[in-house]
Length: 184
Image 1 (tube, rainbow, N blue to C red):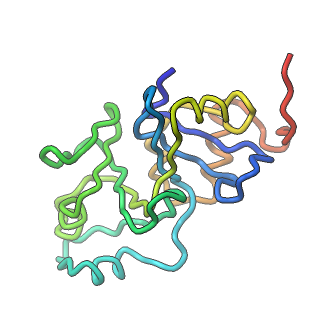
Image 2 (tube, rainbow, N blue to C red; image 1 turned 120 degrees about the vertical axis):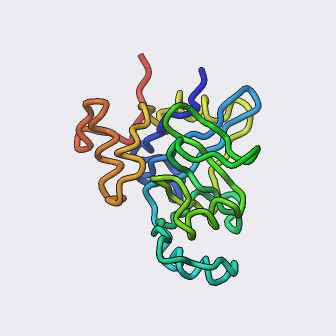
């Protein structure tokens, strides 16, 4: 099973409050583990303007706004830009699939500030990571549902609706979910 380019939807009762009602975009998944970015939890205490100032990035009048998110509990000081596939940094962009890329270098932030960046993007501080077999185990234990990643959902500015919208792509009504796992 390769979940690269898919979404994880946290189930009620997940047990880890950092992932409560989270929607996670999986950037990479292999036998070595998985890496993803939470796409529905905005950073409350940091804006892109503040970040640009801290990093000494000069804005232009073509600068595009980008939302800053809590990407996960690992390496909070490191930034990752999940973006549309229309941008690719030379040797620095992981092309996840035909719709998404992920770049973790300063050049993408400079490109966004100068109006040359991707058409759609989210900046995530930190990431979610799983060791070999760990994510598969969490899915089998009813911790996550998976669905296809739709750019309209991932890049939507309505973060508070992404969890419900992701569930609805599977035909699941959030009110019918239980926190108890069952196995037949």
